[in-house]
Length: 262
Image (cartoon, rainbow, N blue to C red; front, side, top):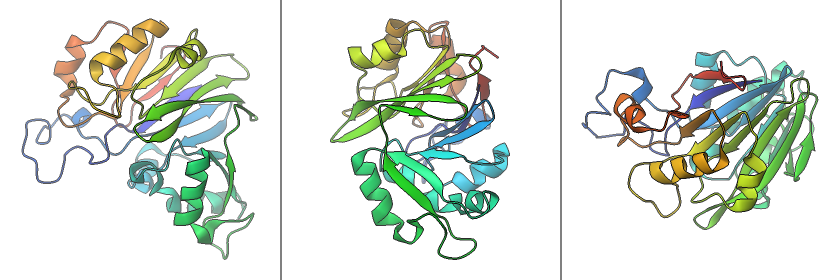
């Protein structure tokens, strides 16, 4: 199983418009964060989770060859506004619609923003086409199983995802954009080979976990390999890494990691 971090920043990205702070002016590429999304490959089956406004550039930069399934964790702009660029992956599929899974609210948002993309085929060659459905608790794919759970994100509900690869049995947990991870969701995550958690900033936030809260959650779950995602410009990569527990790291744009610890 391979996880590709296409983007690791917040809705404003880093550098942030009009900001001259040390992180926004940093020459360390790990401090340049496009909006958050990940690409998951299980036994050759390609799953795209969220599509940031920079989705096209992210795919080119990371050489993403195809998308077999798209999952929208929630309908906020920084996660949904790149979906039009899935049109190229529809072409690669021979004009076949891409299956899209989300929450009930997320399904409504996709239909409202992309009415021209609804249906089994594109309206014309080169257009996107989405077959949109609500995400079930368990979804089977050719590459393995995806389990979903609900996480709180202010007034919005977000999909938490647990990927289990068919051939290896390896499990990866993806909990982004959430204020907390309840005991049910922690139980689902225990035993995973890798856990990815929302870790916005050092200070508390009303709808995201802080770095401290994310670290406490990761240690409670107990995975030996953890990454934080969705970070603001207040997080300087090298300095923050020095302060994190041994089993927890910051993700960065373009990071490729597999659940075996590679």
